[in-house]
Length: 255
Image (cartoon, rainbow, N blue to C red; front, side):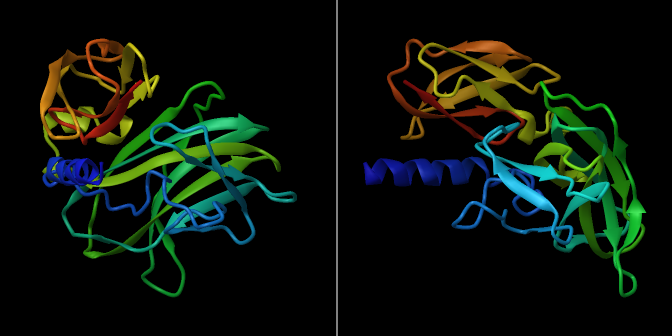
């Protein structure tokens, strides 16, 4: 079993050698401290309220932000990321309202030419829902080679809660046409695990896919588009890797 898991690990690593690098550390909100109270590589607004949530856009967790009493906002921010002058970056995140009066969510970029951060770009999103994840996306072309931080704000009344997940910043020049249409973080499988059929979501164009077993052997392939199902009934129970032609590998489980 250990040998098979090692093969699986090496196989996933091989699949992702050419994957694009997300400049946002822990943008998928999957890594937390040992008490599951603080996400790795993120900072919050003073004593702003945050917690881990099992309601996720993709993966196993997201970050829930709540506006504290007496305030009208909360925010989180990344550490410094190196931007290169003249480079265009594609910035994406997902959000979902939970409760309370949430007026808008922002994905902002800031730099620190002096003692305090200065906003480079503000992107407000007011289309929120408590039943589905919403996507925010924009492009930014750097005018200087410098360190930049990403800030995500929630604004509204005290007690308003929102989920944040899959924050990413990619160098646009390294993305293919289909990758721009299908950011790898958008791909989800439901239900996962599955006993028979699995619905795949997050596509804007049709893509070819291949499913590999833990030995790296191709066991199933075909093409798929948004919310189509893959028939897993002929696969034996176990762990598999689903890989689309222009996306990262996604672990799926057949039970």
